[in-house]
Image (cartoon, rainbow, N blue to C red):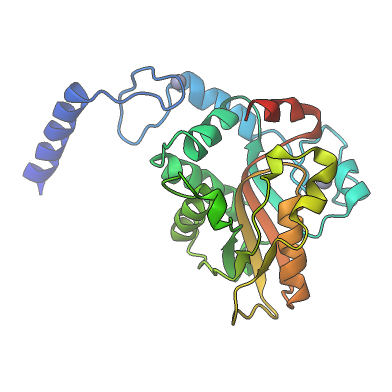
Length: 255
Ligand SMILES: [Zn+2]
Ligand SMILES: [Zn+2]
């Protein structure tokens, strides 16, 4: 046993010399088991993730930004998703991480992001009541040329870490332009009717949590919630890595 741990430590050192570990954000060399970030990036990421958010829609909020549990943005829109938790705002290093995972082929980030999402879900008051995680599905035409579909990988990892099972009860029945390719004013119309229950799926009485990587104005999550609730789901929550704040939409132009 002792010999094993000595051997493992020695082998770990050899690996560190051959393949030095780097911060996943700035590529600075790091030393230490289980670390993903250098001290500076870890600190900045933690600051970003600790920014307060509306528990109803996930928008960043300032002091006194909530009234009866809702912020100004969701009081105006009344989202169909009952609660939305995010890891952080779609800004700075969270944007880099999501883009690397989603478009950069860095599928090894799934555990790191899944851990943060699992922590975010478990920090909510509703997590214990969730029966299953439901991945926001994509259309096959949107998967062409991609090795993996980020929200699906994320849902699987988050399920393993939280112990909440997954339920593939939703499907996307129509393709069309991606949400980021249409003007903001058209996004609700763009996703309307694009999702349906998987044939034979039953969600009556279920409390479900939709999982996606990024939520912009929430149109996709709300359309999925509409379909699930029309089929009898009792509650539909949402969990995303990053939520786009209205004041920071400019970032999307680069995505
Ligand atoms: Zn770093
Ligand atoms: Zn809100």
